[in-house]
Length: 90
Image 1 (cartoon, rainbow, N blue to C red):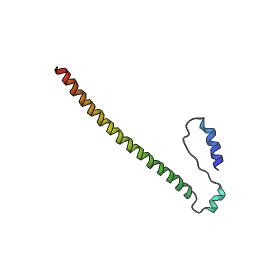
Image 2 (cartoon, rainbow, N blue to C red):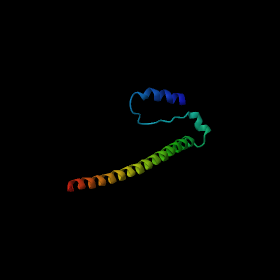
Image 3 (cartoon, rainbow, N blue to C red):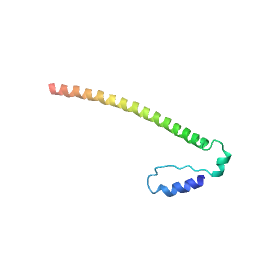
Image 4 (tube, rainbow, N blue to C red):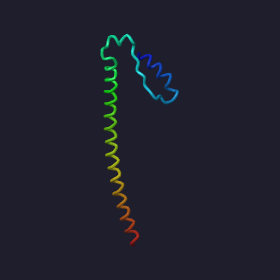
């Protein structure tokens, strides 16, 4: 199934944005597995949750960095205003 998926993905890769992911399963496996898609869905859910948590951490760090840089710019702006006022008084 992985080889089939890679064949399909590689053929679609150069055709632009892919808007969906399709999971398929051999019908004979439905009789073997009692929970049906449960294992596949759980695996995908765990992967998505892990990726989401990693992305949230990156966004949080970027937000903190941006706030620190903004504060630095605001301090520098105030210092420049003071310097311009001093020059204007002379």
